[in-house]
Amino acid sequence: MTVKASIVLSSAVATEPMQARIDAALNSALEDKRLVGAVVVVARRGEIIYRQAAGLADREAGIPMRTDALFRLSSVTKPITSAAAVALVAQGRIGLDDPIARWLPEFQPTLADGTRVTISVRQLLSHTAGLGYGFLEAPGGGAYARAGVCDGLEKASLTLDENIRRLASAPLLYRPGTDWGYSIATDVLGALIARVCETSLSEAVERLVCEPLGLTDTRFHVVDHTRLTAAYLNDDPAPRRMKGVEVIEVFENTAGIRMDADRALDDNAYHSGGSGMIGSAEEFLTLLETLRQGGGALMPASLAKEMGTVQTGSLELANWPGRGFGLGFTVLSDPQAAQAPESVGTWRLGGAFGHSWFVDPVQQLSVVAFTNTAFEGMFGQFTVDLCNAVYGRLEDRS
Image 1 (cartoon, rainbow, N blue to C red):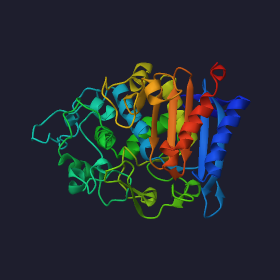
Image 2 (image 1 turned 180 degrees about the horizontal axis):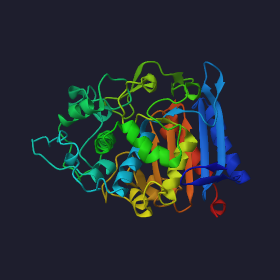
Image 3 (image 1 turned 90 degrees about the vertical axis):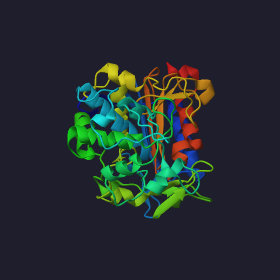
């Protein structure tokens, strides 16, 4: 039995059909050389019913994957940072609708016409603050590139405060609250958390999230280099190991995302609240289950529920049809539009280094799949096969 400070995840066994289906999805991705290695953990009704490491953590060294392997979390960092912010709300130290200028007076970007506007904590959490990402700018880059803004996935010799200062010099993409855009907002949220706590973001997240839940692997640095997986990028005929800065055009007609696997090894890398953490699959599952079960030691059930409530109204989420955005992750509103077997209200997000996860509160189900292969592990066929494998036939959902 795995015991955490505010949640108990006992172990059970998945139904044989479910286990066989998940095994088949993993084996297919490995045999087709779409993945190099993966860890999948599934919990149902508070019990871990499936835990499997498959493939290789380091192909060149012949090191097999292990269930406690450490991964570069990329955007899996966002729900962790978001939970830290909501924990501060629970403590009465910030309010969801407070203006962030109260703590970050130097961060006051304007609209393109120079109009000064107010940004709230809620808008940072829900990605409705008018911010974007450099990798989503047009080919050749735009205002973020000209300002030297770092998206948080590459090594950069600057501090979090300096990156936020650069970001503030670029115009907002829209008036806060009027649109939605996946963005660097969680990095700004991280700066706010650090300012409120009067510590580094790393120390703040440890105190607000990791220590209450007994998480020892989840940090802004690598706690055990022997468990850190290598990073791979899908290629033909097999994934290739990432070397140096990789610039990948994730979406057509964009500048491309700059990724450097060695950032995780740089102790001087600034703490990116949107993409800078390292951690393990089961520890992240512990956070998800804590929130699903009502917030545990982190926050009251009302705030945990608010995190999983759509904050974006009828706004459309680019690249996420049928979903709205809560406080830190997407929330499913239309399974048919999303072409997903999940229940309405399911939370989901991913991570560029090769991760996917979802929480179905209706089915009391949490699924975490960390891989070392971008981008198959984030939005490739494996993620579809895994989801279908978990749900299976309707009679398996009892």
